[in-house]
Image (cartoon, rainbow over all chains, first blue to last red; front, top):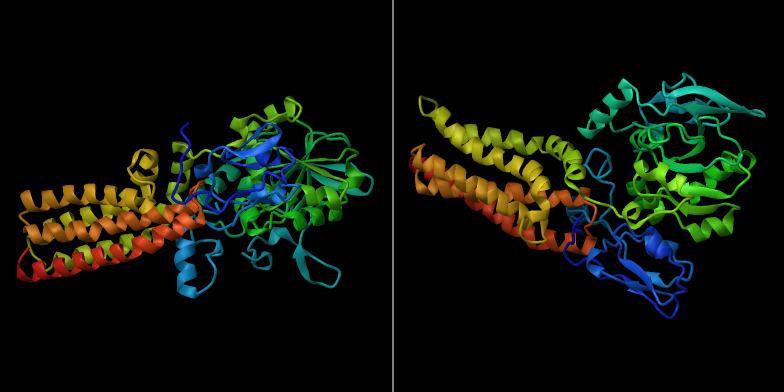
Length: 100
Length: 373
């Protein structure tokens, strides 16, 4: 299936190739196939597929990855703007289809 | 949802001090016995519930209800340790969330297998969302490893976690803080038998989150149900715009309602169905195309067949298009591939044109109705 892409995806994803130990944890946890291992190092194969979930950064044993994690949810962003808080998934468990 | 506020009293047990606390499965019989518990595995002083791998009518009905957005609060199972089949100390440990839909979709895939299921307390939220919030997280996993005394149950050190839990659980930290090692299982529970049979090998297909037609339509009902305030407002507005009462009322009501209500359906149903083929990467723009296409058709009908003026037709298009656009934009929350900066850009660029278009539509509609139809 063609992989779906979105606006501004993957812009905050940073990979420090010096620090990378090539363990492949990022390849293992990424739900969108953003990474590949090439020559014993991780490489960003397609940044546009990255939804910035943060799974790779949390599981990189060498702390070679960083990404600004957020919620890609327009309703959360609108609520955040209205309430002055950071956008979050806590729109009430009845708020949307997201957590079902 | 706070656990203390969970409506399902079966999840609570009374502590020694008389306080209510969430039940922890894996020590005693659950009371009353949930119908998915088919027996108990005894191990020393432990009484571990064995769960069925077949979903009952009640399970399927419950799934249908929550898919339509009803009764999702408290749709949870007690966290703790469960068994499938007749597991022994060498059997695999599968970790999941305590949202009943997550728990059910795991156990139904374990037909004929012997395994342990470790259920984390995610407050009744599914794995991916809970991992994003942190409740399916490193601390919670360490807590349940300790509180279920998992090390006394299994002799190996592998925990199989759903891959989507990786946003909340740090495998390196689990390795540092316990004797267990995290193995990232497949994204979909359906791939677990193949994953186990192959000696825990995963191919790229098992790693990728898809957002196929079936996935998109599975979440459409909830969005449709949650669009009811729009639908009520649209119906009310259509009735108002069709005034005065009389022989022409029904015709005027029907054209207006078709445009407005149809745009809700365009945003909530046609949008998820057609998402990959609609132009633009912005959900709001994709939705606007659908809303415009539908409302132009309705406006043309109202003008050519219903005798409305061109101004009223234009008002229908201006008022309807942003409805589909907004509902489509809200879908970012249920999609599997949208980042926050992108969604932020959509909101910041989209909201003002939407409000402007809707207001212009209302004003033009009201003005043209005051002057005629």
